View: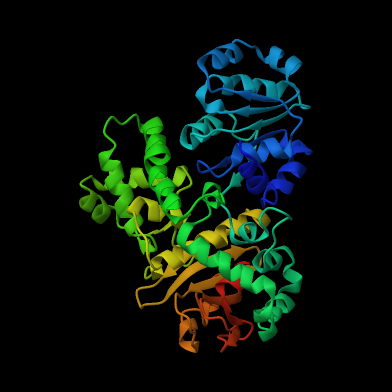
Length: 433
């Protein structure tokens, strides 16, 4: 682990304090840190617990030795330990399950770089016994803070202190805020996030833009396709690569598996399975439609979003300006990633009706919904909020607030829908930064 990765990737990650707290509770006796490849899982855990021994399962000799140990051996030798690349020794999961059941004082942290195989082992053997922490690529506040302090954003503040929602949102409308250093930093890193995503390796100061694109192109072959090979044991990865590329072209769009499969030259069920692999390896999210309303006019198709636009651009070998679908997917991902830190129980969906009403993202909380429209434009108008108005007539809970997030530097309150449904137009970088 180089000094850059150590200092930048780990300080100030959103989940670091949660990992520390969890490790001191009964819930976190066995903690699994999961996420996409190369987002800094191992580095995070090593820096959070610098005095904890690490057992690595990289080599065959190490795996063979650890697999010889009985549960009693583990309990007597390793009271607190980090297990890295543990998916390479799948037989170990049964032993760990026995250790968990026999001794309530053990503190184990489990990591694995082959996410699909790793999580398959966890789900099959340790379900109900582990606390799960998801680590994503960098969010906007993590990029802004450069790893020096615990990251914060106005959106995180909104979720963490809902009783102060009105004052937090009103503060974002203050025109003087546009003159602050924080605003300039947020805008800079938001533009970076749209173009390059948040993979830690790309932030190395020695990298230029060509190096970044080369790394992103290699990421597909070295990590994404290898994960599929681990899971499906496919001898021919070309059909998957085609499906993956077509999926990248369709970020921000409704998924029709038959049409996607036909374009990729695979069956609809195969296309669906390939997308599930991408979802399991934390590359995409299939955003399900809002469905609690029984009206048949509601769409039943999921919407596909890549969780890191830099990775998506690497798959497509794409440079140049960001388009509307990329913008939407980046902000959907940012909403989900930041919310996961504060409220991992929040549920997300999109809404689309046959009469033309579309809402890019619904976030369901215990007491109501936040609704989001994401606009690439640099100037918002009242009409941009038309699909957010009167949503309570469809939803099963109140609409707490609606947001039109765009590249317009001016924030303002838009004309409301029903009473109690405030709608705000806010610069994206200010909301998430």
